[in-house]
Each structure stands twice: as structure tokens, then as C-alpha cells.
Image 1: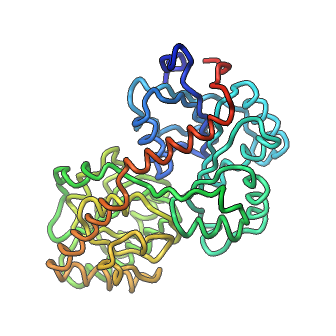
Image 2 (image 1 turned 90 degrees about the vertical axis):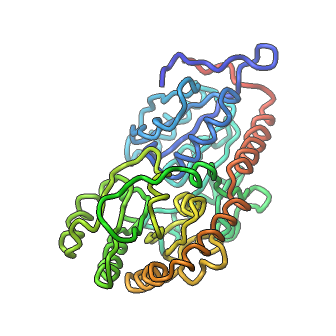
Amino acid sequence: MSADRRAPPRDGGVPAPTLCHVYATFAVGGPQMRFAALANRFADRYRHLIVAMDGITAASERLMPGLDAVFPAVAIRKGATFANRASFRAALRAWRPDLLVTSNWGSIEWAVANRPRLVPHIHIEDGFGPEEQDRQLLRRVLIRRLALRRSLVVVPSRTLFRLATGTWRLPTAQVRYIPNGIDLAAFAAAPPTPLPGEGPVIGTVAALRPEKNLGRLLHAFRIVAAAGPARLAIVGAGPERPGLEALAAALGLGERVIFTGHSASPAGYYRSFDVFALSSDTEQMPLSVIEAMAAGLPVAATDVGDVREMLAAQNAPFVVPPDPAALAEALLALLRDAPARAAIGAANRARAAAAFDQEAMFAAYAGLFDTAIGGTGRPSQAFSR
């Protein structure tokens, strides 16, 4: 992003408000894709500072040309809590954004640095890494409880809402449930992307990270593959790919497993799938499941987060415990019954249209941002490009 882009003045020469977004990484992932959709939809309504704490900004490819968004450099020392707090607080003083928007645990130091409050703050919590998939870590619970007690907290799942108001003891009035939304039409109408081989296609779209547990999906697919012709397409990139490719080879799956790599526009892949699979250890409200629903697919998934609540009631029997055999059984049942696949896919599409259209998400976030910014009594005029 060019550092000299500026949003045009609004309302008689007043510049657009500046939002400072902080991510542990700006690699391609659900929270980053949601931000890109929001930023593109709002266009010049806001200016954006995006802090990627690990320096990775790959998701910037999803931001439309001309968007007023920059990636400022910030001094960050791993494990240096007090030095980082001073550095982050100095950055907030220098930039004077109208709103600080932090994302997940990896950005919590910025929430701490903003106390006592320098600028209004919204924290968006999408879920947890492998270290918190089974239980909340006490130290993190206490830090969240203290750092977020006077902030607005946004969650995309009912599970997280219960956690934030229960375990973290945040005031209910300060926690907002805003479900994720997508451009449903794009996934319903995309032409299929051809995949090599023959047989029905089980597909997944995911970052290849440990918490996605794609090894579980490979073990389940071995059971499926032994029962008849089928293919498995894994769309995505990440550090787990070499190990997953080695596991696929060790399981004797050969060319029946297709690793496509990263896709900036995966809608066509969904349209080439017969069944969508989710094998994660931890999720809350995965965008990939909504995308599969929009594409009219049945879903076989591990029972994590809000996945069961997200899907149409007809899909419920195929949401299973996190076990390869159970996942394989769900996949086989769907592959063997084409009329059931079609009926469940249609029900999922209708459910997505009713609950997960992106326009509702856009309106909710715009209202939240504008309300928070309105509390400052001024738009930012101090950020130097």
C-alpha cells in the first residue's frame, strides 16, 4: 500500500476517521478476509492503519486498489511486555487514531497499552489457537478480563458470547454478537474449477495450520477411498503442507489427494466439490463453512464452535465428534446418497441467505465503528503519512 494515499475529505473538508487495526499476522485467514471485505465495502468512509505484528501482510492482496490503508512499522520485541507497552502507547499517541481495533489474543498487548485509555477501543475475538482448544488458560482469562472490561468486544459466535460474558466476566452490554457474512451470490454463481482425476470430490478450504487438523481429514479419507472412487481436494497454503503431503503418501493415497495451494478466489473450487469437509480441532464461526453453504454443499464437520448451529437442521447428523472414523462415516453417507446431498445443500444455501448475508454484517460493523468514533468528539487529523 502506498504511504501517501489519503481518503478525500468528508463533510466540508473534515478528513475521514482513522481506524488502527492490529493483527498478530496479516496473512490470509478468516479475520483478515472479513476486514478486507469491510474495508472494500466502506471505501473512503474510513482511513486504515494496519499493524501486522509479525510483518506478514499477504492478505493485503484482498484490499482494492486505491484504498486508503497503510502498514506502519512498529518496534516489537518478543517477550518484552513492558517495552512493547511503551512502544505501542507511543505509537497510539503519535498516530492519534479515532479508534483502535484489535483482533484476537495475538494483539492483546495493544489493548493493555491503551490503558489508561488513549483512544476508543473495540476488540474482535474470533477464537483460539491449539493451546486453548480444550480449556481457557487462566493467565489469558485474567488479562482479557482486565484489559477488555471497558472496551467493546465483538464476537461472531454464540459460543464466544457465552465465554466472554461468563468466563471472562465482561459486562453483557459491552459484548456484541455480529455473525460473519459473505458475498453469497459470488459462491452460488461461480463456474466450477476443474480438478484432476475421477470420482466425487470431497473438498476443504483452509489455512494449513495445526488447529485445522487436516491430518484427521487424510485419515478419514483413507477409509473413504477404500470404499470406492473419490478424490480429496485441499485448497490453501501454510506451514503444515510438507507434513500433510508426506502423510498422504504414507497412507497410500497418491494422486487421489489434490493440494491446490493458495487461491485468492476459491469460489470455483467450492463449485467443483460434492461434499465440504471441516476437520478442525477448534473453530468458532468459520467462513469456509458459510462459503460451502452459499455454494449449496452438504457439510461433514467436527462438532466445534457454532458449526452445528450455523448449518441447516438437515445437516446436523453429519456434524460429528473429532474422530477420523466418525468423520469418514459422515463423508461416506453423503457420498452414497446424491438426493440427500442435493436436499441438504439446498437447505444450507437457504440458511446462509437468511442468516449470513454480508450486508447485515457491513451495517452492524459500520454502526459499531461510528458509535465508538462519535464518542471522541473529533475525527483524527494528526496521523502523518
